[in-house]
Image (cartoon, rainbow, N blue to C red; front, side, top):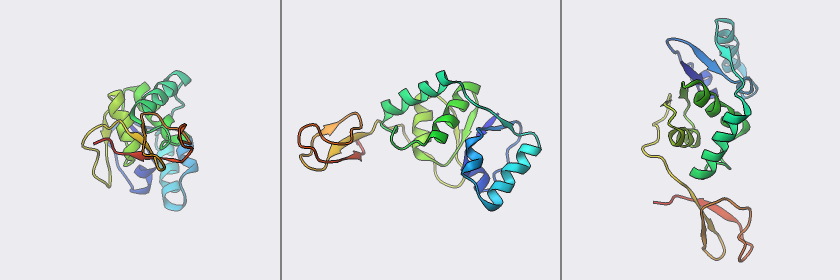
Length: 152
């Protein structure tokens, strides 16, 4: 079973077997990609709404990896659906791939290279340079903004 992100419809991805997505994906699609979504739904693609427990599990994993600020509401529900259904997530989104890796969810990429390793992002103050493991809007020491930093 494959859980399809918007990139699957944009790049005209074809899967063997059962396909699933979340209803929010349709809102991200325009023109031909939207028609592909409608056609696949008409051909038997299932729409799945993950339960809140699965979404909360994804949110915890995203905080662990430092990707919580990068994932949209739709992204969180797609990863949650793949986690809940024990399915393969089809996406080109690096943050989604990173969180999926944290949860042990298989990922298939379409038009880009996938991630090589799972990362736990850090946040660095643009003023004083302090590094934090969790995202904050402002540095609690100097008040400057934080930016996401690759820990390696």
